[in-house]
Each structure stands twice: as structure tokens, then as C-alpha cells.
Image 1 (spheres, rainbow, N blue to C red):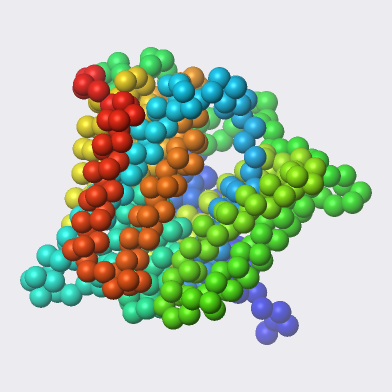
Image 2 (image 1 turned 120 degrees about the vertical axis):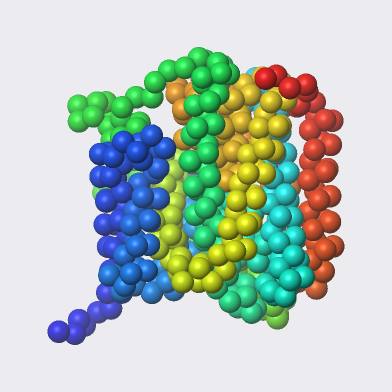
Length: 459
């Protein structure tokens, strides 16, 4: 029987929902995934990948990619609309974090990311040059999908990959998402043992403390005190508060679409196509502007940070559970040699760099080290999960520093985002582009010395 309405999008949503529920159940029951803190979205994504790639579920990769792309943009817009009201962070600001230990920790994290991104890009670019020397031509930006996947996560790997497919890079999305998936593997399979090693060595500031059972299982006990999801700042007789929060996100999404479309028409050519890869960045900027305008008009209080964080959270969960099944394993197998070499080399080098710099921190070495390792191989959420192992109650300043780092690192990441497009935008040779990445890494290391955030090894 033919339905009078199209159901395709909602059927994809239903499929992803089943994967998330399956992941939640497995996390609650299987000790192995609890030991490595695999989130439900990652578990569900692996199940989805098996179902899709064996044709047990007939969903095209394009549908999943489209779903994930828009969710990625929504998450950034929601982040921009979220006002930080964390008590600990607020009190830190009153103590002027820009002159204290917290600022130095945040600078170290930002500069560490500023070193690892170029290193991952250099390894990827050199691999392309080596394969070309032996007669296997890869697209110029093939290797740059590695830092996008490792350092920035599946959303940006998908976003840039989709745009690069439009300028001749076949299967860029699948390759980028593969790097992101391998990054998650390093974040948990290497990050968790790294955290436990630090605990055994006595490097944790607060000492070792076992993680609560509900944290490992991912489920709160039935009779435990519930955590607040946010505040209802609008009267239900007028509009549901969640509907209002979502509507503001939708407004920003529309404004961002017209902004990117207009800039694309002005730029024209391949640059116009590339701008869509930066949709998330424009969305973040416009959402911050909208929040500022609402504050000036005394309506800013209506944007509840708790509910906005829920929007960010569910969009990221659905983003990850959609991206992994979108990986076409047949394509991965075709490029298995360069993907494997780049992934393993980058994973090992990233670990060595983070440990090298982490040993030279002035204080809270382990907490900061595992936080940034999870971030530069997976996402900021991975960093928080690893931090929770060594600092279960978030008593150190690392959790604040991780949040502040996301702001401080922007001046570093923005030129990196430009450089991954340099061979396409400015016809820059791959060799010159890699030298530019090396320059950024060196500058970041010098800045570590100038800001005095590293010293002699502490362990």
C-alpha cells in the first residue's frame, strides 16, 4: 500500500533511535563496553554499520550523511546559544582566570591541540606524497581528512568531505568518517588504559576513587535524585519552553543558510562550494550574535542553558550514531593501506606528543593530559569521559580549562581549517601546505615556552 505522505526521513530517524536504544542496553549490561566507557551512540553506530553494510537494513549512505550533516550544524548553533552558568566556572571568572592556573591550563590544552592538528595533517600529507612516489595517486587533501576526523570529530570530517566530493574527491565522506571512527577507537582503547596507568602511578591530584556504578552502566538508579534538565522560562499557556528553544535554533539555521548562500553567490566557483563546509562555523557565529541581540533587548533570559545543552546533547548523539553506519566498508577496503598507515601513525604520534607535553606541565598533569588526548582523538565529550576516570567529582580545574580551551583554540584552528583547503582554494602545492602546518606547530610549541606552561618532566 502506498502512503499518501513520504516517510523516508522519519524511518531513518526511527532506525537511528533503535540503534541508540540498543547501545544504551548494551552499555548497561556488558562489562567490556563499561570498562572502556563506550557511549551508547558509538555502540549503536557499530551495530548500524553491520546492518547497513550487510544490506540487512536498506538505508542509503547519502540519507545518513544528510541526517548527520544537519545535526552537526544544529549542535554548533545550540552551543552558540548556550550561556555558561556553571557555578564553578562563574566563581573562577570572578577570580580572574586569565591570571591564574586555570588560564595556563587552558592555554596548554589549546596549544597542544594546535600542535597535534598540524602533526596529524603532516602525516596525512606525507603519506599522499609517498604513495604518489610509488605510483598510487590519492586526492591532494586525502590525508587532511585525518586531523579533521581525529581532532575535530565526525561532524567536520563529514562536512568537509561532502564539499570535497563536489570538487572531484570521490568517497571523501566515507574516508573522513573512517578516520573519525578510528579516532574514537584510540580515544577509548588507548585513553582509558592511559588514565588507569596514571592512577596506578599515583599521578591523580585527588587520588584514586572508583567510578560509581551508574556512571559505568550509563543508567541512573530508579530511586536516585534526578538531575535537572533546565528551566521553563516561558508560560505553557503560550508556548512550550522546549519548542521555543528549538525555534530559536531553527531561526539561526535559516539565517545561516541565507548568509552562506549569499556569500557563495558573491564568491562563485569552487569557493562557493567550499563555504558550505564552513556552515557550522557561520552557524556558531550567528547564534552568538543572536544571543547577544536578545541580551541587549532583555530577552536573553529566555534562552535556558540547560535546555540548549539538551538540544546539543541529543543532536551529537544522533550525529555519531548516524555517521558510523554511513561508512561504506567496501570503499574503506579499497583505501585500506593509506587509511591504516595514517591512522596508526597519527594515533601513536598523538599519544607520544600529549604524554611528552603532559609530563612537563606545572600541575594536574594527568587530568589535563587525558582530557586533551580524548579531545584530539575523538571529541570534547571523550575528553570529559576520560577526565571523569581520574577526577570523578571534577574537583580539579581541568573541566573548566577544557571548556575555556574551546574558545582559546579558535585563532589556531581557523588557519588550520583554511590550510586543509589550500591545495583547492589557492592551488598551493602539498609540500608548501605541509610546511605551513609545520610552522603552526612550531609557533604553538614556542608559545608554550613563552607562556611558561611547560617545564621539566614531572614523572
